[in-house]
Image (cartoon, rainbow, N blue to C red; front, side, top):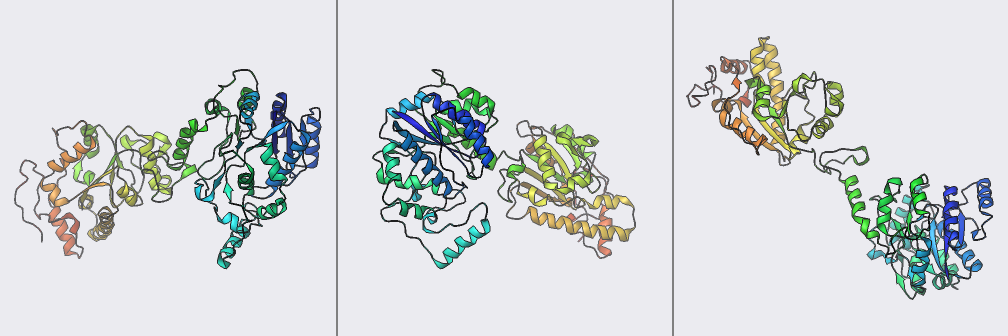
Length: 565
């Protein structure tokens, strides 16, 4: 008793010949079906190359295309030839040209000899199939599919839609309960011959010709009629990604394949020389004699799927660029955004660096350039200070900066004159700590000594922009940690909020401030705001600011100034 191998081949014919000779070296006959899409000359050369081996035969050729009947017809033709030419075969193993035996062939022969009446074929009803991705379940058996899904996708979709509209349903042949599963099976001679010699085969074939992806349902359904002992699993290791596409195994998967203990694996990259060299051997003990257990490596594949679909927090890759709202973490680590602090305090950035140990940038999204920490023009990950490059995708600039500098807290300044494209992303980011002193943008205008008409126009624009930003920060969608003070209330008692901010930046190493940042001289600022009011512009974001405000006196925060109303 031996095992016969049916191989469906359409590419990498040199590898198919190598594997076929490996099977026959252990006495297993091989019937090769070569896709009719392969040129006649290439096919003849392939046949000639294998002609010296009497255990290698070639079946009638069919044109094979994914999801169509041709693949089933190919396996039927090859199986019929196998059963007629090799009467000693008791199990027929269906494989592809990209399949690779992982264990000595004799172990597979012995394994099947110990289970002479067991059919190994994944076979489950449509209600029990959890693995279909972007396709049809029960409808593949009740609708007609005359068009190729890959070559004529528009016709395929429109014809399906038309049948649904007309409520068309095909009649499933009497006695059949549709089942689905992997196309890579290993059937006993008794079961396979019963399927191929069934008096109703013509009716079954006519029905399955218009079933979608019949190679995953033809044998899986009919074997239920004839098999006395089905083990619903495939002996071939075949893994699929989240899109339903098969994983390809490369040279660096050698140890992974060894751990699977499976007899055969697909798909193997044709140029994986190390894999073919390692596994195409019949040396005793090449792999452990144990029950095939692909589940041992399922955890690794699950991890791969998660890495591809979810990725790591704050890491964006071309292969899984996320849809809005489906990101796995907007950024990779906590960071702080300060609005209005550099305008209100002198040398705030170096003071904050000293107080927190964080990397403190200036206005990263300033109109002229990205003000990177220390005046750098280039930072980790080759991010430069060029404003045009940064503004091509401001959100990705920020997420890349935080990812490239992970392990180090990043702080940056922001204001209404900066690029506002990042507002919503930062507001939605739980990693963001946002501290805003509203109205501080007016301090540089106050100090500028420019034409007052121009100042009033710019102040109105900046106030409008900041007001829109504040609406975002106060929205129900905001997940960042946000603190907002009017300039008037912050100036009145600055030490407590500053200490709170510092503690949040470094909660594991809280620091008591021994030196506060120096506030700019605000003498006459209240009158400046009153002048804006007198000119018809209402600067309301600063709060009730005193008309007579001298230099900040932090030791006496509770004085009672006259307030502008």
